[in-house]
Length: 393
Image 1 (spheres, rainbow, N blue to C red):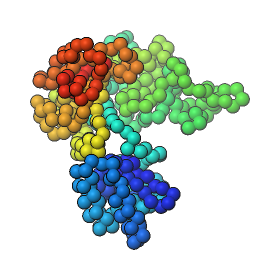
Image 2: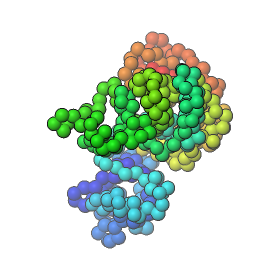
Image 3: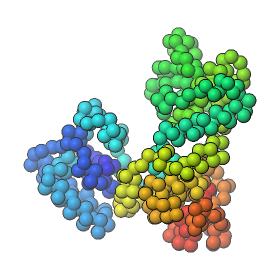
Image 4: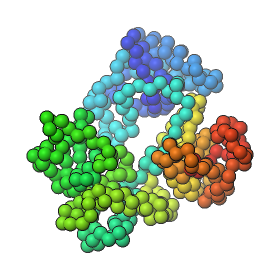
């Protein structure tokens, strides 16, 4: 795993504390730019001798042996390349698109030696969902919009196209538009509902006096920055077409769409179906357990922070690790697990109480902390006393 790969001006390169040589072996030489000369091999040998100094003794010894074997095979000569090849070179070298999606392209370096803990969300992070999952949200939200009073005949015609929208778009709630901007916030393309605006229409709405562009901040704009929001964008775009004939404001319609989709995640319309047949909705990932294990072997604290409650989290995580729903081995992949977190409030509202979760049942019963009062949350003594699965906070 190419975390912490750094190239120095001297021509030497160093690895951070976290990497997986099995992945390194699997990468095509053309993609990562291997060097095949004796000078490179000598520099790589020197690099390998140094990069494990901060590892624990047992892990350092094991990895040194594996690295030596790689050096003998000429594989670790890749580490001495002064620069990574351009992305377009990697694109040409990748045998197919599926292979390309397994690669990591970094725009800036991160020294993992300075990172003490690594946290993951579950939904659409550790657990990747397919189109069938999105359809549960889409169809469920359609029913809820009809219940809110939107015209049934029109709503029932809505179709979900997973390729119509993508992350990085901006929704203009006030005008009923969906925007694609460049990094300078210039609107390159704009759709009113499902109709693309002409160049003249687009410039009239998003070019201010003296050629300035709007800032696109405030309550009128929503960034489509998660895969969950692709359903929102699709519903809103088609609903705008209906509202052009009359009805509530576009902004109110967006609030209703957001509320309808949220209800689907809360009332069981989505998660009850996933719990019955997880293989129908969740994409398996054989690399998940090795990745999480590698972080912990590198001395990092690993935590799970999800808005899903324990019963659903247990179903999904057991499917991902290939275990039965009654198993709890997935918990051992993490130092701390927080379910029902209620993000983003979890990150900024200090008034929310945290409860410990008893994982003795698949539902996960809630209890107050054993130690009262709790003067400090966290630390080995706290986790030993309270366990490591919590809710809210």
